[in-house]
Image 1: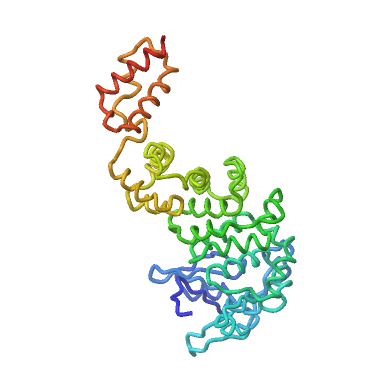
Image 2: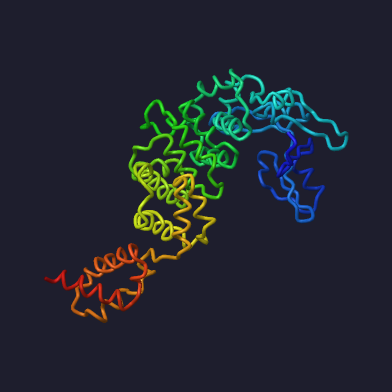
Length: 386
């Protein structure tokens, strides 16, 4: 395909014990499956002995493996024709016993042999087929696609971590929207989330934005993906879905923040130019609170939020670059000042006073001076005690 691989799989008829005798530094990375890692000049080379997989009762891994003696035996156990190519470095021969080159040229994903058998062996294979279709922009051969539908009871056995890992891998491709569409079309989400509606319909305009989203913002990709599937659910329901699918705590928190933004923004985006106070209080302040300890927030970062805010992003960048006070920690009056100035004021009222002052400076940043805030706090507290 004209791409440079990030890694190479090496295979040989030498058994692990023989490989270990040949090299000084060898790590037993998966020796029960015939895999060892040779370390040469600080580079790791993963080497697997030709093998024949025997009986899959858990729908994920072979019950045991037998070492094979030929490359042909090894290639037969692979999942898809495009993944069963081998290159003999010594002779320069490309071994293609399953017409993988033809399928790559025709952009087709096809299992080796009977797709029902292949997918019954390993429930992750159907999800991999969808991911490859998404990232490579290939189509799935009809019998292979039919087998995805008919082997769902096996797919159900895979770990949720493996499923979400395939989703995240698809997000690295040029069109993650395709993965979400395929998962919805094949009703795959419902395998792991049985409470979902039997039929999920994606919103194409939201998925288009998913394809334009920075690969660095996984939380935003997830938010757009799930918003395209169901925009009417509560944050609590979405959190349950994300936790069930074993997304990391950080990705879950980021997704919930962006999903809330999407939900709110979609209801106001058609109004006139958004009010600056709303942009600051409802969006920029939460972004600062959420990300300031992890990421340098600058115009470049704000621009990555364009899939949510559209053309209003330029207004948000302008506001951000003015460096307005957005959080309680930004205002020049704090709880210590309150306790010094108003020793009689109940501490339970501090939050109310400080939030009043914060709203004041969100409306008018020039009010963020100690003397002005002292004056405003005095007025507020006197009204409070009347």
